[in-house]
Amino acid sequence: MSDTLDASLMARAVELAARGCYTTMPNPSVGCVIAHGDRVVGEGWHRRAGEAHAEVNALAVAGELARGATAYVTLEPCSHQGRTPPCANALIKAGVSRVVYGMQDPNPNVSGRGLEALRQAGILVDGPMLEAEAMTLNPGFIKRQRLGLPWVRVKLAMSLDGRTAMASGESQWITGPAARSDVQRLRARSSAIITGVDTVLLDNPALTVRPTELNLENAADIARDQPLRVVVDSKLRTPRDAQLLTDGGDTLVASAQGGQLPGAEVVVLDNGKGQVDLTGLLKVLATSECNEVLVEAGAKLAGAFIAAGVVDELIIYMAPKLLGSLARPLLALPLENMSDAVSVKIVDIQPVGDDWRITAHPVPA
Ligand code: AOF
Ligand code: ZN
Image 1 (cartoon, protein in one colour):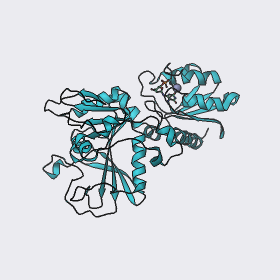
Image 2 (cartoon, protein in one colour):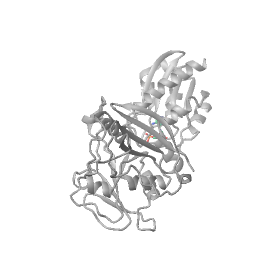
Image 3 (cartoon, protein in one colour):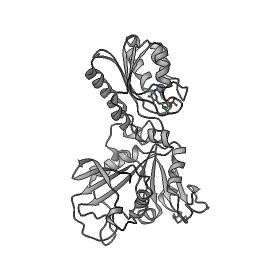
Image 4 (cartoon, protein in one colour):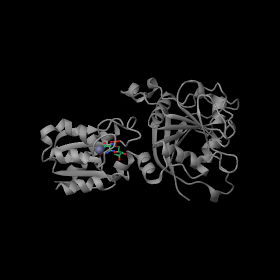
């Protein structure tokens, strides 16, 4: 069996897995291809937690043709009884003779046991193959399983001259419709959207996924499960008539002091300085199975997440405009000297409509 054929069938499995990225949470996105040589006899991907896993969907397509075939799976087949029965057993029962996996499952209930079960049954197991690609599918699932923390993205939008608002405070519509759709897709793949009370007071946002703006085929299906909205609000200043409290959706308010807010669950997480403990908040979110979270906040809170060293990814939309104003900086970081500057690695720059999307990863100090 040639390495290039294996790699190209695994690449196809990665492509299939990516179709689930808006709907599988808290489960990982997984894809599976079943083939005899270069003849594909079954394809499948995991769509939703509680529904069939990728392997089971691919085996259903392959039917009897799975016997003696190779299964390419982006994640180690599971060996445990979760919401659904173990995929390793299904592959064994279907008579596949070889399994190529993308990466080992970081879930402690599986991690290696699925591969072991396959080997015990006399199936040839190869991998990891295209591990980096397989990992890119599930940054949040992997981080949560390994560290008990979600993958944290901070979204920011600015003009070419690094401004976020006019002197008047006017700040809506800096970026165009394509970038706004892109943000909707970022929200859709997130388990939670975090904002600050200042943004609630200023913009009264809904922080929902709106199917009409997603620009995706299965938009209605995706928007069915809305992300949890989270407000960082040390002193419980969220107005009672804020959309986040009154629209019937799920909202969590993280506070440094106890209290009640109708329409939200209040969790007290004091960092000892009268502020919300951001790492503590992320741990709480991971415990409720949030894989990826999106921070959509102003300069202070976005800066506080970065200063706390808990940000995995910055997504910065840059509009081809000069706003000129000195109002509202992009980020507020308590740094004095150039030697304190936060280094980031820019991993991607893409045009999105007339705007540009910059993806950067903070480099650990
Ligand atoms: C696979 N194939 O397509 C996925 C896997 O509750 P369950 O039954 O859905 O199991 C969820 C766990 O199974 C999840 O935490 C992860 O370890 C694994 N996901 N495994 O073989 C799949 N989605
Ligand atoms: Zn499974």
